[in-house]
Structures are given as C-alpha cells and as structure tokens.
Image 1 (cartoon, rainbow, N blue to C red):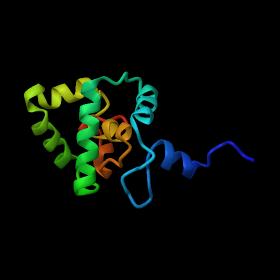
Image 2: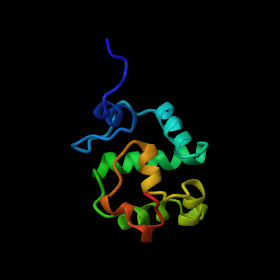
Image 3: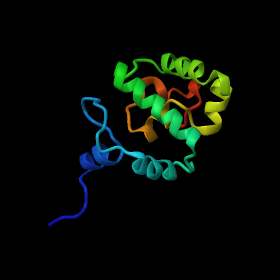
Length: 120
C-alpha cells in the first residue's frame, strides 16, 4: 500500500484546491497552521478572524472574480483595525492571495498581479 499522496490529493486535502472551486471540507485550523508555517506566518487569533471572513465570503459568494473587489470588501470589514495596512501586517505577501491560500480557498485569478503586492 502506498502512503504518499498524489499531486491531486495534496491539492485537495492539504491545500484545499478543487477543480470546481468548491469549499474545502478537509480544511481545518490544523491545516491552516501547517500552510501558514510554510508561508513563515505564525497564526494568531487575528489571522484566524481574517481566514474565517475569507471562508465565509467564499461560501456565500463563490470565487470572487477580481482581487480588487475582495480587497475592498476586506478593507471595509477590517477598517476599524486599520484596513489594508492591518491586513498586510498579517499577510505580508497579500491578504487576498496569501490569506486565501491559508484559508484553503481559491484566490481570484488576478491576485497574482504584481501591482497588488503579491509575490506569487
């Protein structure tokens, strides 16, 4: 019996990436901590709050088409804490792209645009 996961299993079980962009059931905070560790982030309650927001938004609206829309929504949601400046302190490589990765949801396709401060 083979104990190694296939690439597709890794994407679905560990990273939470699905071909049809469904919410990932195997994702949980333990998976988030593992992904965050690989991103050199030590998750705090503040990170978990943002990840929860991203997952709820994805569950309610599906994959957001443009990073700007999600970024603006996140800025509004966390305005009392400093908005995008606050979010970038938590996710320095981009609250949308890096946050989505750790949250186990697909980021908008244009989140890899360098003008949005990502390094993906």
